[in-house]
Image (cartoon, rainbow, N blue to C red; front, side, top):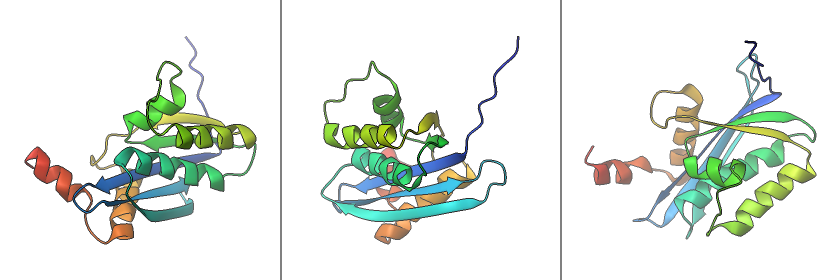
Length: 153
């Protein structure tokens, strides 16, 4: 059986985090050349009065805004929510509809070929760790500390 190997113009890693205690969070992305591993573009930003899911989706939106029209990209994220609402037609989002629509409209308008892959967060993936630390840098503290305390780690 022959397997088709998908090639992409870019590989994108995204992350978002949010602290309910501080009511602030951040998003981040890196766009990587899938052949060389060279970082082609990266950005991050802080957000307030939002949610973790909005932070995750914002990272994806900001990343695809940077892509040239007509290209293909694999988006690697640790957010199963983002993957579900953006790529699974059976997922019916009840929240964040405007942001999801904006992502899908940008995707369509730029004629992008996008594929999603899930990356286990906090598990040593080089670029996932990088975007996670970029989120922390955007707010000035460890956004995961609150979660780890809640989980008893």
